[in-house]
Image (cartoon, rainbow, N blue to C red):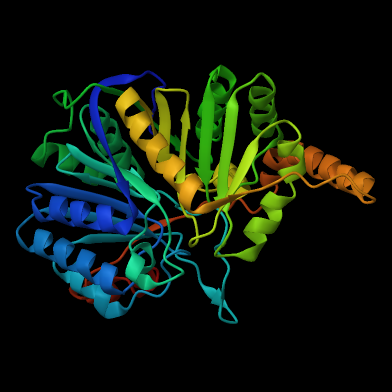
Length: 415
């Protein structure tokens, strides 16, 4: 797994554009890949063979056929059912298609559900980036129906893309491939300024950056003086995170939390609901988004700080998964994100009211106390969960696989 060095220093000179849902995101990504001249690096948790997956397949295929180096990494749990035809056509055209932790099934069930590669990153030609929470599946566009997801990503230009580019190289490519890529394509260094936004690219892994994303959230909460708005699909963070939210609300900060009201998995709402009393009593305002499943992972603090990325605020994302966010310091972007979140709260959410005191008051307090203090320990018990070292497997072209099978049948069976 990549242990690429990250910097907590603000990188100036970037431009970020908020992309809401697949209607904004997919056309921009597909256009960028269609204009690629040298290289496409793409990581995603989910890639389905549906109408969106087919559009991505087409632009990746066309890029590879015109000589662009195309590297794709998908998660073995999130993208388990891609057909041999879908993958084979890409590989035969020259796409370097990799699967993170390709797990075997036992009685039809997938076992590799922990420590997922959950990032969603695209870097084109080392200078044009995308990052957020949107996967490549039809349920990210409105015509999917009532189960279509509400989500966000950003399009990025400027010097921070160089860090994203370096990270994807170290996370995906072998050392030999990185050397060949550097020889053919000069590394993305010293990209020209594209705007006035300052940014930090931050990731989470199970080696050197185990709590970086959560730590940046907590720092922002600690510094908040005016407002905090967090919209997150899967919310069950740790004790320290909850403590900073409560402290901010108690010192007069307007702290608002947007969660799923129509969840894609009922347990999500149940888990978050266990925290409601504890947060509401401190003055946190909670809104449930009810139009369709909420899948976004965005937040803003005061008038400048914002974040967009793949990380939920639950044990999987904060202690197990591989994640990536950008943190943005810019008033204009913050204002745009605040406008969109305010629109959701006003038109698509219901505000959760505190439960009136009654005969079960003592039971609720005991439950809240137990859940709250249980959260102190989840970073520790997450470490007890299976810690096998996930692998990244490169899918071989048919001709390569046949040649390998002839020379080394045992190795061929592992491809």
